[in-house]
Structures are given as C-alpha cells and as structure tokens.
Image 1 (spheres, rainbow, N blue to C red):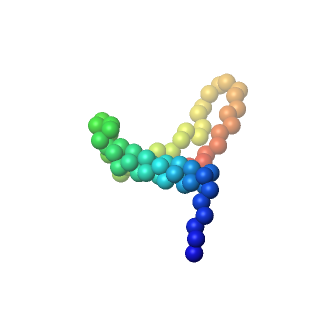
Image 2 (image 1 turned 90 degrees about the vertical axis):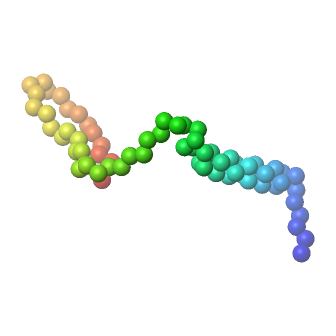
Image 3 (image 1 turned 135 degrees about the vertical axis):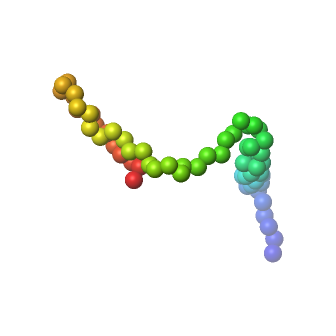
Length: 68
C-alpha cells in the first residue's frame, strides 16, 4: 500500500497539527501565564433578572431571556 502526498496536502496537515499542538500548549499553561487567576464556584442561589419596575413613565422594554 502506497501513500501519495501532494504539497498542498502536506501543508494542510502541518498547519492542522501545529494548531492542535499550540492549543494544547496554551491550555496546559494558562494557569502559569496568568498568576492572578481565581477559581470560583456558584454555591449561592441563582439570581433572577428584574422583570417589572413601577414607574410613571410610559416606556416599553423588549428583552430576551436565554438563560433557562
């Protein structure tokens, strides 16, 4: 079985492999690069948005709630 590689195919493979290696390198060193990172977790109850406010002004607001 023979493998035939063209120049453009080799360049595409090299670029994709280099991209993956750089992304893994950046992901593994992200904590060392920024020493000011803080780990947090959400243990408190979920805060809900304000749906209604009493006011004398006649205004309408259109909102979209995407956080289900």
